[in-house]
Image (tube, rainbow, N blue to C red; front, side, top):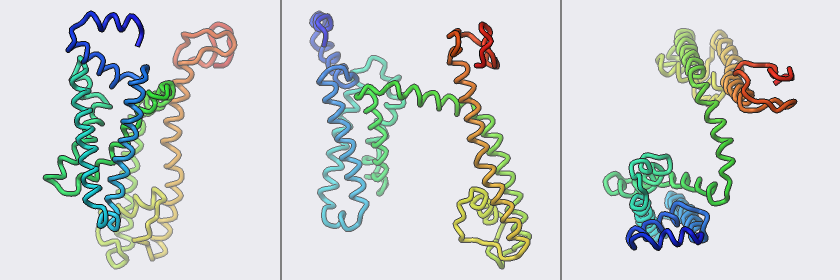
Length: 277
């Protein structure tokens, strides 16, 4: 903590000063206490997720069930106190509660309490692993988040094209499933149109579970066409997102020749030196 920050804290009431200090420790990572808090928190998150995973193994649960149950509640109470401290030390409570990390922090403790009413929901505690994303802040890897934002922005800008594409895929699956229901029929496993549509989705996505297979020559021919079509369909969303990423790169980067910025979104050449963008 800097000299001027110490003076600032000394000039405010003790109650507010304690809140300020706790806020620096809990939300900051520039001090030793802040880094230590985050490291201990991440270790606790990893251990709590490991406890849930071990509890899902029958042989281990039979021997250490009580111990695992006690550890699970201990971690939940620890994270509950931490969550309440975060709320108590922020100025804008609503902004934190509805932020990404705020929602994740809440979801990390809810399953254990819900398990009292709904048995089995405590296994959802594995969502705590998302809290380890805080390691980016601790290790000063925030610049990697900008790259993630770049990809997220490209996906968001592609959303309409991708939705139209997915709608077209759904139509193809409905048509293909209906055709296969007529061609193969219930005697070959295509007992109804929804089951046939399920087969079309599995085949078009090239997953191929094999639980339903066509037996007639015409049905096998249609299957071959759908499988070949599936390989082409996989490449379409990739091309859409890649195009948006390329467009964003053109808009963000300056000219490699003269370094000038401010080009139009659809510009192919630099308006200052004529170099290809």
